[in-house]
Each structure stands twice: as C-alpha cells, then as structure tokens.
Length: 119
Image (cartoon, rainbow, N blue to C red; front, side, top):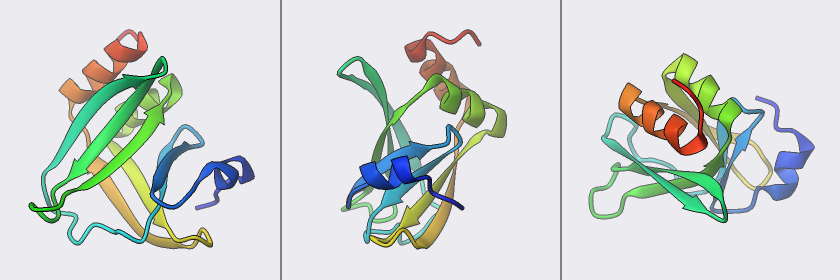
C-alpha cells in the first residue's frame, strides 16, 4: 500500500483519512485486539461533510472508534466491494495491520442518501 504525500501531511496520531477514494488509513498504536467482532456504523455531519464512524467492539468495555470524512467516490468504491479496507500505520507510515470491515446494503443506502447519491 502506497500512501500519497497529501495523506501523509494530514495524518496524525489517532486520526483516520480516506485515501485514494478506496481505503482508510489510520495512524494509531491502538490496534484492534480481534477482527472477528461486531462493528457498528454511525453516520454524522460535521461542517457540511459526512463523517463515518466504525465502532469496533474488540474490547466491550473499551471499543475502538474510527472516524473519517467520506466522499461520493469512496462510497461508490465500498459499495462495489461490500467492505471497507482499513490500514493501521505507525508514525513512520509502516503498515501494522489491515482490517476488512464488511458493510451491508442498508448502511450503504444510508451513506448514499446522506451524500445525495442515487442507489
């Protein structure tokens, strides 16, 4: 996975950014302990943009929250794949973990509606 310079310049510890309209890059030392767990989706608006939150219940008492702004192209991409690819990297942009988050049709429909995309 290659991370473009514009993403590197914006990515800070504890943040996630959509990269290349295809996948999400998160800079964090807090990695999911397990990937075979329930994941909830929350969709919100901030400053006129659509924010997607993935709540990963790897530790029920302390779930991991991933939050990032989404674009129409990104939503089209994940609609076709049926999943969100998330790469966790360290401060030197070395990949520490990859996680595929399945996304169902209802979540995709809701995202498309928020972004004004026809089904």
